[in-house]
Length: 376
Image (tube, rainbow, N blue to C red; front, side, top):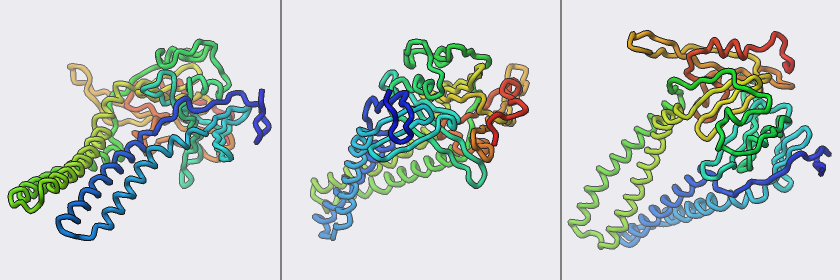
């Protein structure tokens, strides 16, 4: 086995991204930049030919947007083509040339697996280290993107490789456990939670939709008036209409995307979310994303009561609870609270059981011993 040149440790596993793809955020930037470039250039042509105005600013904006579109479309592929991942005896290393990002294997609090919806058996492995809460609250993470069998790689990082054949996502998570692992509790969320982020997205979607409607109301009569008085040639009028239409469609598209994230996506995710407690770990599945947390990392279990719901024809009310898992780790100066204040609750999958009924059972199962073996 080869040895790592930085630490001199034996390399247990090495690999590269299975595919080189452009992340969704960069694709969105590319699309928006292309639309802005086309709209700016179209307005510049109309203003120059019809009014004889100076259009240097609009042309510069169009050129800058075009460069941004090309960069966001191609540069991620160039970047990821030289990335390499290493797992040594004590560290996980992300390496590109002389640039390295390193995380201690013993310091990893939990891992998230994001499966690719298009490639079977390929996904991202996100290794998260929780660090002190309070004024220094932050989260350190290392992402191994587009690796093959990310759940098996996580087992290697944990030091518990499985002898079962790899079948990817064709098997449910409950059937991809360790050899000596069994499920002792499972549940599904009963409601979706309106966080500050989700409320803000909903308000933003309404504002964007209102702006798009106002734009349509103002632009359409103006274009019809221009066509009646023949102020512009047919080609310039068509170019102006295309520019206005693209701008309005972009605004509507952003409004629909934000509205989907605020209203529809949480409802879809509820149906695709399930919580598991095994004799060794806490597991959460939400759509294409999974969270894997060793029970020994849990320092405290904090159940909180939230809104009640009606169950049955008798009209009896049953309380729902959010259960926050407070994490601790080696060399930690304070307990790291992951989402205990509700921040980022709908952005990433966190060690939280949301809207469950039997919080007492969870508390009894996960209640830590009196002496914490890893507390500082």
